[in-house]
Image (cartoon, rainbow, N blue to C red; front, side, top):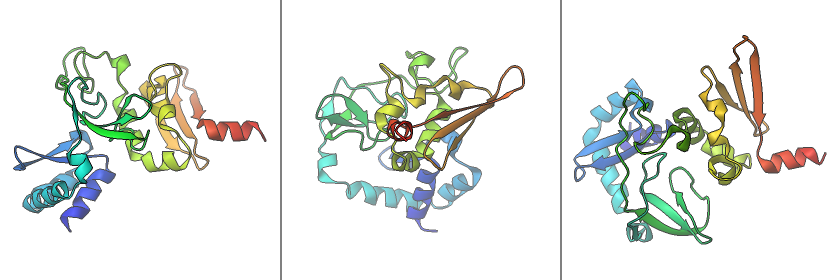
Length: 219
């Protein structure tokens, strides 16, 4: 297997691959998504992967390399990413969580955010200093990243997914917190949430992108 194939397999699984310590080590995040098979391949092809990642870094677009640093901009509270788009109409959008969200200029975050570490009141997925209600649930992050292409094709706009103020996006729905929730992408582009309530009944709720909802209302 070629190193590029392994990197693509990791990305497909929702894993971010970067080098650290001057390119001497490979960091995979989030670790919970790395399967035993993927971990075995990474260990077996470590040197080849390091070289491939180095080549990819060298081949980055010059505009990305020259991206200015915003000293007050903190790392993404969802994925910990440092690359953002400064929208032409204002706002900063994480390149990993909200790719192609808005046209703008690429910048890098120069601020700091606490290491994600768990304690009695923190599940390990919430950065210290941020309440859980201010962060997207871990299972939502994982599912949305896995189905990113399908969501885009179905007409879901970034604001409908990630918006925090006013009417919050689907990433913030309380349904993600249901103990046995099952989330599936439907053929019509809607997202179905199924779970069992306290009375043992199976509850199913569906969310649709605005464009699809409006088209159905107009029938």
